[in-house]
Length: 186
Image (cartoon, rainbow, N blue to C red; front, top):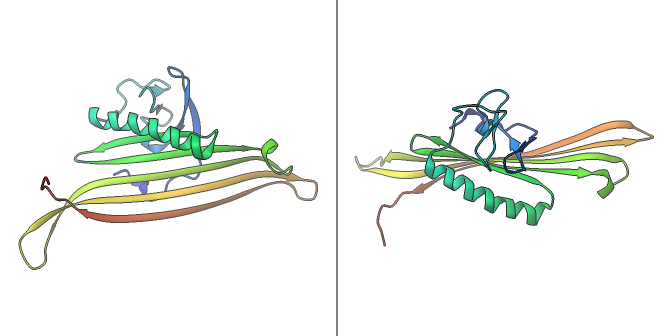
């Protein structure tokens, strides 16, 4: 799992996939170098990065499906927001990043607000773990799911009384759960 699952960044940046003409979000889960980011739509890096890391074939298919579904969800609930979903291989495990960026414009809100941003970052880590029961030598496989979510709201305002000012608030939540792996086919 990537180290940054513990502390997702505060703000997301937008880039454009020129092959599909769809914007995407930059994040540690889609970078191949310090300044090159992979689009979830074409799986190409911008700027170009030959041999940049790619998810495995099956994980890439899941990533494509997740982006189509998540894009519809974001459209229904956030209107004109940008979303990106990235999957990363980790041997038998995988991590996924679900990202949303919504820009708020002053014409839609209060006269004092000039710009605003809603950044939502959810990191999911799925792994298979083997545990031993304390009373026996019996081993049991468990799926471990860890979720770390951060939402950041930033408002850039200006008024005659206060001048220019920025308000930023964020909320983070974590969840870690083990689910028993049952190989039986019912």
